[in-house]
Amino acid sequence: MSILNTILFAGVAFLASFLIIAAAWGLGHRRAAAVRHLIWTGAFAVLLALPLAALLVPSQMNILLPAAPVAVPTDGPVVAPAPVAAGIDPADVVLAVAAVWLAGVLFHLARLLIGGIGLIRLHRRSVAHIPNGIADAPFRGLGWQLRLRTSPASDSGPLTWGVLKPVVLLPKASVTWPRERLTSVLLHEAAHVRRKDCLCRLIAMAASALYWPNPLVWLAARAMRADAERAADDAVLTAGVKPTRYAEHLVGLAREFSGFSYAMSLSMAERRMLNTRVEAILDPDQPRSGVTKMDVLKLGVAAVALTAGLALVRPSLAEEPTPVQTPVAAAPHHSTPAHKTIRHATVRHDVEVADNDTDAADDPPEAPEPPDMADVPSVPPVPPVPHVAAVPPVPPIPPVYAPSLSQRAADRAQAHAEARRAIAEARQALAQVNINQTVEAAMKQAEQSMREAKVGEVVAKKALARMDLDRIVAQAMKKAELAMQKAEAAQERAERKRLIIEHRVTRDGDTVTEETSRHNEE
Image 1 (spheres, helix red, strand yellow):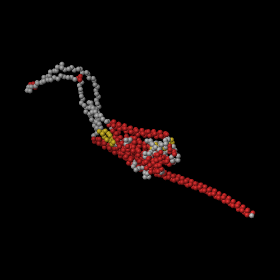
Image 2 (tube, one colour):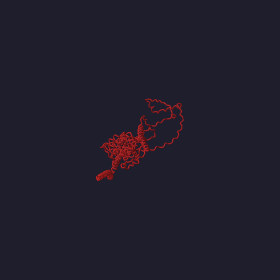
Image 3 (tube, helix red, strand yellow):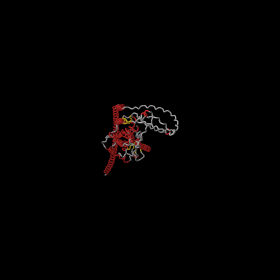
Image 4 (cartoon, helix red, strand yellow):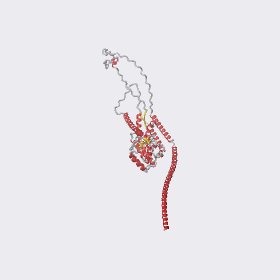
């Protein structure tokens, strides 16, 4: 019965994976990339939690199967059942299918392991790098300066991996990048680190390995990876980078680097989704809103409720108790040994009876003549029978409880009532969650964030005012320097003119003096 329950649960889980992926696809339609990525993460988390919930939560849908009759042993030998014709055993088919599924799971887990080993080797070959001239305000709280590394390979594009200690790996050529391009790349990778995209991808890969026969799971994992990159692009554009410039940087990275990534890493320069990403970047009507804490809370409550509901309504098989059936023992067959067989000579007596002779009828029949002992064979002596120990009495078998139809109906009604009571308690527990307090706390946090944003805005305005004042003073100093230079040049020109005039005046005075002397002499 446990094997049948395992097979039934595997089929139900496989069908539930189709329904969950389809529901996630419908919920994420026409939403921002960050919201779609969050929905995909919740769907894969439900797929992983469903087997664990099935082990912890008892099923409320039991399917009763007729149980095999219980045979009571008897003193006589039991007739053996007829031999079953040779054919395919269903147990062998189940074991073969389970072996194929387990081989697929191990294969995909081996891919994850190989990818992790490759990332460890890449991390050991890389070196720490701290860029110069980059403002740390957009990256505050991430500690990216301590985990930013440079790859020794020239074709390795920007990569991000790690859950507890994320690592951002830049190519060797990044030391020569312009400041605008380096800032865009770091903003993109910082968005991955903030939203824990590497952890989300690890959850998706584990669910894909567990449900690998389902093609929708692989399509959903690919869509989740594309949404992660598009959400990071939206974060870069929200930070103030122009869409056209960022698209140029993205195309340049895809042209210069290979975009290769491991199973547990995220690559910015991946070429397979480049066209859709560039179209989304240049589309002004594309929604670029992020994910709030309230969105995470709603999705978490919905995921827990969905997992518990699927675990409660999953069907399970159980045996229906039946009355005890005692098999009919075969009649014992006693055979006489050959050495105990005694053959007696057959004596034939012919009695003649007259039709009308009453005297003959009244007289008793004559005794038959004894057979001739010479014709009877001799009987060999019988050996003594050995003493046989007494067989202990068989203890009485307790009667098997066989409920009636009314009792079974009452048990089923009681089970359904308990199921409804458990569902009502679950709903009451969910209703006890104080949504108002959560909303009030979120509103207070939003108000605090608004106040901090206003304070930051005032500080930024003051900084900008100081920057403008410094710029005005610098311009005034430059103008003053130019005016001083012009004044000095004018002063030099005036000095030269004065000297020329004095020279002319002196020369003219000498000439007049000479003419006057000459006139006096004459």
